[in-house]
Length: 211
Image 1 (cartoon, rainbow, N blue to C red):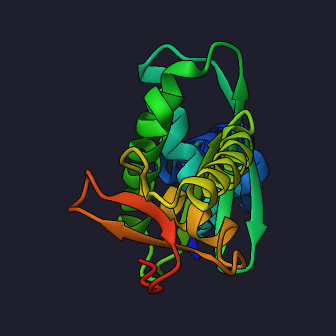
Image 2: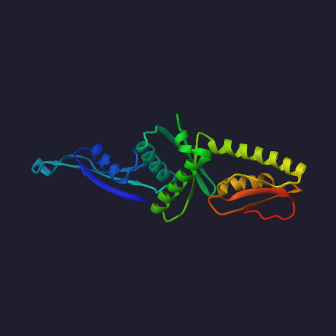
Image 3: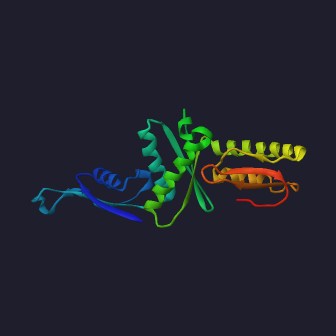
């Protein structure tokens, strides 16, 4: 937990000074009024300043959103952020208009955005929390597309007997292909090549080397 104390002429000014130093919004803060503004003893020495104590729990989702807010603002992209906490990771959903720039070709920009966000969170928190970034439900749509593609190509392999090599994919997308076909009794999937050009291969089952 981070705690900041500030004094100012008014309570609101003191609170604002604390929020600025912590880099958070008011609804994220725990605010305690330490001292009300007013006259000092016998009114001889001017007005007494207001004093407040503001604290907040370090939250990976909040840190991720703050980083993304600054980044999208620098890109002149208007976006809203919603945090969803799942077991083992935090999902930040980005919504807005004209957000294609945040996705990029086949999600390349989105993967880079996720990588940078995880670095930003890890820099501030000792407890490493995995952050997943999604834009307008892109990951779900992409997953459905990849599953459909995997099934279609598996059928082609069964009919022709020839293996099929897919385009280079991220580890997460390769995992989707492997999982989609793991119960196909006569089809095998494995990965070959080096990052970032590692590809999934679908072939008739001879071995099962999933990576």
